[in-house]
Image: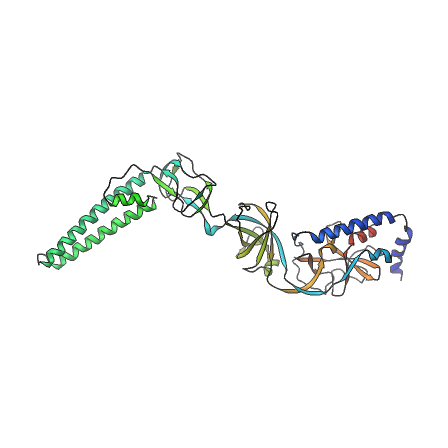
Length: 415
């Protein structure tokens, strides 16, 4: 009985002096509790949530009067208790959520950095960042000796192919009239095929340099080649997001980056998940992306979980593909990611409004140890599930905790 003499002294030593302050604190606490429970699900997983769930483990509990806390329990009157909301703790089945951070990147499946296919100085820029381009559209013009050499090679190869085919056709007629041996006919046909292969290779070289099909058709018809320049073309449809060259800049074929083109209708969000939470994440899980750029969360899907951890942060990269129809998500933007796990599990859940923080920012709740008597209990938070937290340690089934009004009891306990 001596263990309970202290709470009685607290209540009798100041029954009137703090009544007004207590009433103000009660109204404030009820308002805060209602606002906390209506808040959007953007809370962060507690740093200690990596501990495995163990509902029967009360960390530091040495009895019903609290868990590792030296503060005396608070005894409330019946009228004061009527203003609180107390509910029992029960074991429920739920789908946990994991809140982490991430950064936005271009969708690597539909974006590319374009390397120069030819050497020479840039003469003209045809597309600026922000421009929407089609596949094959010209982005820049280049005055290149490679282009002139490719045209000359094609002309020579085409002339040789035409001549070799003419000889082969003539030998075919001579062989029919027994004018040449079959061996000579076969050699002529082999020469014609080799010449045509050289012509096709030269033609492919022109196309790789960005020569338009209409210009190639003119060359094949034997027409004069107009004074044209080689072009850098977009290999995919999308938006020009970077221009990396300027007029007059000398390009080196195969090594100089020129433009970046990306389809911005979807983006990647690279989230960081630590090993304690990896069991919650599966390919196909839904995710919500929260950013100040959007008033509502954006929805995506987990498409990739890395096979290795980052050696510096020891986090595993998780890739979320997010539709981006309004182009609100930009590359390198910092966002909050909530991954809704499809893996169901059983555990203890407590309302977000019931979890308070001490002077060291550690979470705790108030437990009703006897009717009207409330003690502080330190807890370990796990995943956030809607408007509740998973409690991995500190509570057991049957505990009665204050779900609303805990700030009032904290105020009274600190007096």
